[in-house]
Length: 126
Image (cartoon, rainbow, N blue to C red; front, side):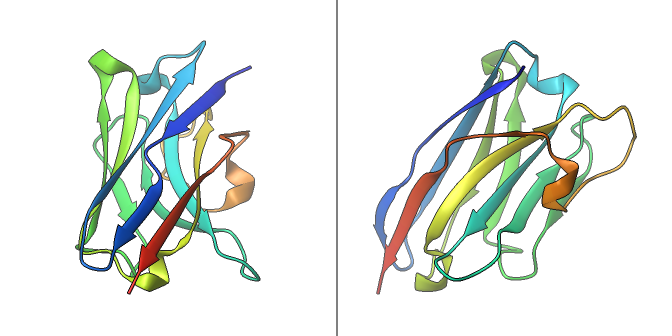
């Protein structure tokens, strides 16, 4: 079973930057489809960025396109979410997710992911 270890959340002022990290145990990150989800109080969990297993395809939610970047460092066995020009609306608990599906697709639905991190809180002050 893959365990996902997240870090990097915190309190940042609007317009600032934050970088989240996620390191899977027991599996190489380049064998997994990876994604970042977020969930704000009273809202559904939503995918903000996804990375295919190949590392060549990415997907971003419209709300974060141009501001967030998902990337992978195979040597560190870690996936990152670089968050720039953050806004108060980005405040949420952020979750790393992984899928070992053999399909060559990029997944954005929560049901497509079988492994989840514990979540890291991101709070943006205005």
